[in-house]
Image (cartoon, rainbow, N blue to C red; front, side, top):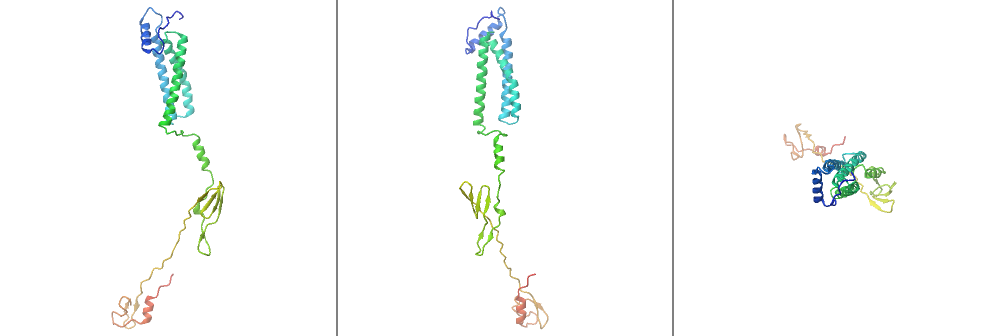
Length: 251
């Protein structure tokens, strides 16, 4: 196709260039039909680009697709995108191969740059700058969780002769503990609270017991009857009063 007519407009003059391509395609006296390759090429390019963007979204935003699988799929779709752009450019430039290759390179470069910029901005603005799951963040958390831990509740305080509680010193890989103060390995200190449970016994008073009147044999509680037998009216003997108010022995 070396005898093809040259286009009179540059690629950036979209309106005039498109009108020229349409007139060329409708002119039966001119060889070739540029719209027959430009339209299918454009559709293939848009379909491949849309699929690539969808795969990138599902991988780096939704984290629903494995990263290795996503890169393989993008690598398979990228040649279809470049081929569709070339067919579009070849028809758009009226079969001028050098200009079609140059336009293809420009479109592909601008598309890749735009996709990268949009992806980075979207991660920063909408993703909060968070690293996707499965990165090194989980490993560092695993390392930090593997260190030795010392529980304060497992160390029981000892009572000294003066009655004050003292906690034994504890040596750990990160420092040495003295009482309620932990001296860290890097020179810093950290306080630690030790909770003690104090159990205090309270003696509950026991109600007076009933006694038997030696005169009439009536049983009554002396304190409730003002120390007088309610049956015969005899005063309660002193030994019975002491027996009624004597605390019971513990079992």
